Length: 164
Image (cartoon, rainbow, N blue to C red; front, side, top):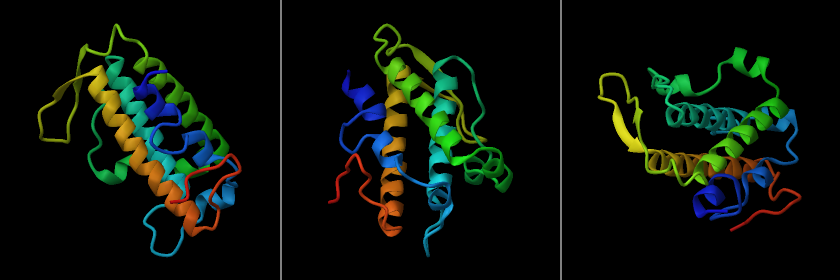
């Protein structure tokens, strides 16, 4: 497994995403600790949203960049339509797909168009660069999920996780 795949799905610089997300009830995933801007559910939905955008872009589909930051987070209707377990599975399936792309050496250096914020020109990146960006984005938001779990007294998970 390459380090890039490890960063997307495995045990790289932090606990594996599967561990970070395990043993969370639907109620806990939707609970908003005092002062937190987003719940665990909202953070994971956001990760899954951008993960799909990345998969679209590396697959040649120019999914538009959201018009506003809020568009990258779920609405109340989105949360009603997709259960916590369904969201976890959607994220996991996308992570596996991103990990597979990270191991496809023949495509990592291909250039792709990545739409930018409205009013900015599209960026040209390699598949590798876009996957590295996704890994960094996921790590940031998974770290927020760990903090939310800590605030909710739900850390570490049964499979373990760093507590430093």
